[in-house]
Length: 180
Image (cartoon, rainbow, N blue to C red):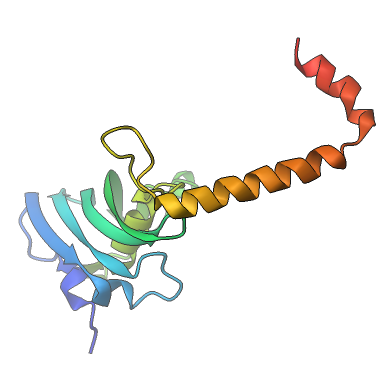
């Protein structure tokens, strides 16, 4: 039994035009994908499915929040995410001009169902920011745990002292060029 069956859209017999689908993703969805960067959270997918004769235009609106570790302090926090993605699905055999186009996928005409589970999974991960840090507080200070930030600052100071004592004088000439 396919546990991700709810992410399959039977398009045969569907009328031409716009259709809307909504999906809610939680831990159970992400647990089906090995190595997922997301394990906890609640993400909503609003899908606009425009069916044309031999083409489907899918517009995904991804929003919600995931639980992730802060890149600065290492503490878990809820990170809000939002993104929009468009995918074109064509019926038939893949054409050479679309080989390198990641926004176009081809499915055989014999198919009757479009499985979106992996596509949704990928779009959620594409929506994740590269750097994940606590949002700043209202006063502009970092939202990270202040005790951890103090520890990190003291480690940076110690590392900085070591760097100066082991400084290679051959780099001085190049560093002087960089100041102009």
